[in-house]
Image 1 (cartoon, chains in turn purple, green):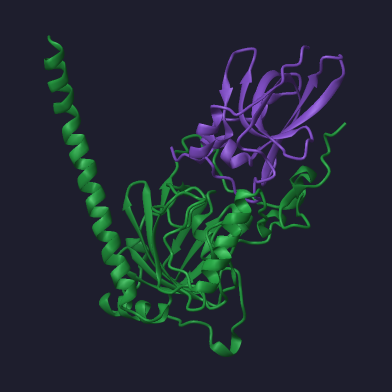
Image 2 (cartoon, chains in turn orange, blue):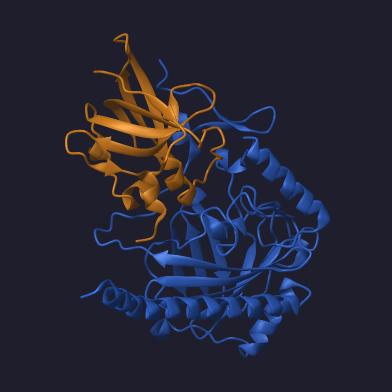
Length: 131
Length: 293
């Protein structure tokens, strides 16, 4: 699978500014002025409190497989955002965007994921908007 | 139809909506000023509470056949990580009037945040405590019985018990700092008036200031429509606040048709990737990730 990796001062930052609610821990370790986008397959969806992690395996330009972790809110907030554990079964092909961790590890705060098979979009922070 | 006609119709449609919103904003501002003034009339949380109870005729016992309907799961209506939901965004000074010492502490945290330096003790699942309890952005339940109302926040499994059986506060001889304090209250119809003391020093929120061990709170809780619970909150804290900090907290009962939204236990140890530690310079960092190659 071809790796798609882009880092930019993103338009998505606008969305993040309006939905900047994250508790439990500070997110200053993530660079909210940047985004990273990768395309890969879901390795594991750790659907846990207080934060969930979506682990995605990406094949880089050299053909090497590397894992990326995308942190999100816990299950109750994900449910409110319409995100179920089964939405990201292992092997699901996705493109996912997040705010990259500043220390250079392959981790980011999940902003938006798109499931490639049906184009459905998943934005965890939508779960903070009362419905 | 000409463009002018279309414009007139559009304006005629929007004008009533705009006027209603302006009117609501004005009413909200007027209420806020009134509540701020009310807090300023009293030198302590205890004095304000006693005045509110007196005004309510001492309160009335709640009966099982006349209970307020506070059931359901609630989320914070607005505010993000601001203690005052009607205050400026995080990164700007909150609406509190802090003493010089606590103002300086706040400014330092705001400056550090700009430089990417910020650590929250909650990272290790230390309870947020009260008054911070009020601004947690996660789920809540309000469980009302005649003699006790229990307020439960999903985050960090934080429980507040408000005794409404006529008891007073725990005697000073037994005081010690606690996360959520000791709360008593009375019912005025379906409005719950509360007083909380015996608290622990902590922060209102990240970059929202700190409170001391002397912090106390007075609240008036009321369900104002089918889905909205509000709390008028006055925080008194002489070492930290130059005057009481009034805020209007609001929580929305969530649509939960399939009953999938439930409060579950929070623990930090369920996923090693959630282990966030304080760095040497006071910032936050995840420990080793389990998914690293």
